[in-house]
Image (cartoon, rainbow, N blue to C red):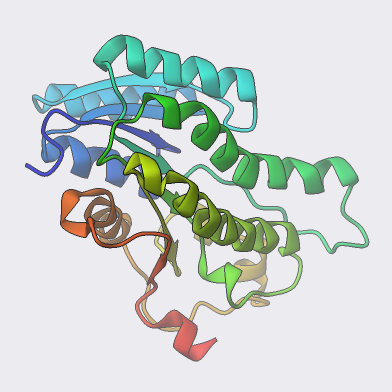
Length: 243
């Protein structure tokens, strides 16, 4: 039970990789805070956990809004005390060339994907004791990408740089900060991607399941990975080798 007596916040916990991570952490004893923009989806994940005998609460949160992030953290602390794991999974994509994208849409992607990592770092770290861990979800798009998704790729690359620097700032507190970079994963975000539908981005090689990513995230978040810090674990079934 790697997360026994540990409070774990997972953003994007209402679906896909986030939901699978919530379920896995709860099955290993974690007290899970399911955070999602979709309140009903967050409630459904939390209900699934509690029905199975686990501990979970749900919070509706726009992760790109600092005040809402602070409220989510406050709810976690009120419910369970200290926070031990924060998984930053929530993200969004746009599919418009840079010369055509509206400025507001570009910065909405950056704020949602990268700003959320900053907000949870800034406001979450003060509630995290030594031995705690952040896991930021990057993407293979940080390393190899396609056209029309530049804001997403840029945000994911920045998340990996943020992780490296923030991990050094957290060393004195005994808090680890790492990334997991998924490849193609069987989620709505993959199959609803217009680039995938049109063939601009070809889905070649292995396609993972959300549970595959949850296993990697839980490992990095656990004490088993206590000697892993400031790094990115690519979990892509070898996808980068063929891009």
